[in-house]
Each structure stands twice: as C-alpha cells, then as structure tokens.
Length: 96
Image (cartoon, rainbow, N blue to C red; front, side, top):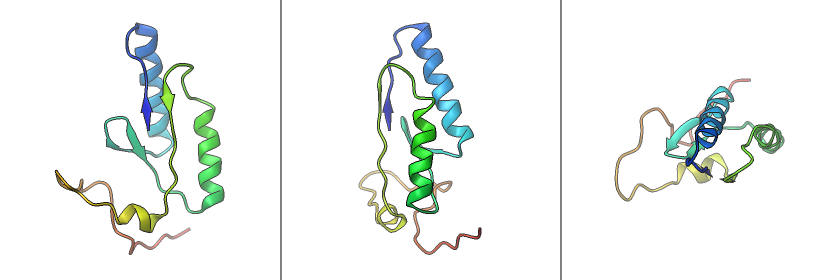
C-alpha cells in the first residue's frame, strides 16, 4: 500500500518508476495504490519485502501487510464486485 506525493514532476516520475517496479515484481493492482502478490511462504514474503525496500521512493508512505492466503480469501465485498483477474479462493494448487 502506498501514498506518494504527486506535486512535482520529480514526484510523478518517482511514482511511475515505483509502480512499474511493482508490476515487474509480479504485483497486481487490487485498487488504486494497493497492490498484491502471492508469496509461497514466509521466507519468500520477507525477501520480497526486502526487494521492494530497495526501490521505494524517498518521499511518501509505503507500507506492507502480510496475510495468509486463507485470510485473503475471506475478504468481504461490501460494495462493488470481485475482480476476475485476482483470485479470492483458497482452493488453489501451487506447482513449484
């Protein structure tokens, strides 16, 4: 999750570079400024968090939140509908 300043052209460039880096790391946009990615285990999640830390902008707020796949699947939609490109089911099989 992030909230980055957009006042200057430098801020806007930093935002674009950060967003592009997240996408190249395999993140999907869940909603504006909230990106998600599945990690296979806690160690992989921690490594991913460390890699994100290497390219965060100098200004703004960037936060991470780790939840299990089962917790993520229990999300409730109060308004709006589930996006079809993000799977909210806990019956997936991961092949490594």
